[in-house]
Image (cartoon, rainbow, N blue to C red; front, side):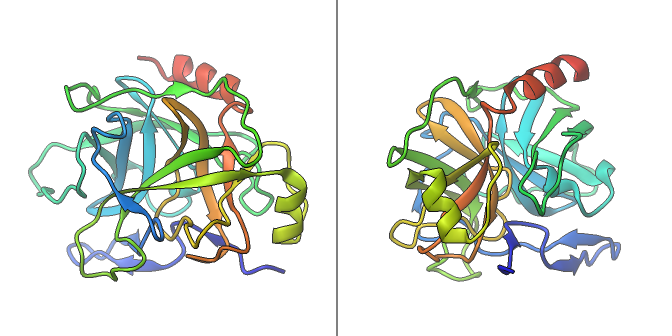
Length: 258
């Protein structure tokens, strides 16, 4: 069996303040390029557990974000909160600061991490996500074709620079991989809800990129879910298809309320 590496929540560290178990931060987007939140349209969001940046996500509306279900596998859900509109990892957390907590989180009822099924979640924020630095992604309607290049985004240290550099938004441009080639490369069948992309010039997801967007122009078409090994070009990365789960996403946004 392949040594599956879900791109967050693999190794746990203790928060020094209250000894609460939190997901550890690791290097992310491997061999990516630095960009600004504005260049990405302001649609990216940082997902924190207490003070630890554990996932990325996509802003869908003034109150809703899209991310991966497995971001919430570990920890108390009341301690998750988000920061939007920043290029660098937000570091202004204090005990008295107001945090934009996730007041409602809905994970797809068919979620099965090991089978690559429905690793997707929609969450509602306590405070509105609205400023001149924030934008909103469009739910994917486009068909993605093999070898078409898409943009994948996430926060963190580039895999080439080590852990000593402040986290900053990075992107990679990678091609869509057809289903047969993807199955052959990773050595297993994949369900129809999966998008495969990558296997290109050592540009991959890495630990911590879970939930971040795969973008075609302004459409969010995928949610980052899995990578085999940081910088490993022989196997593509796995994303949940937003188009496949569009009804779930839209219905959940209505259910959670605006």
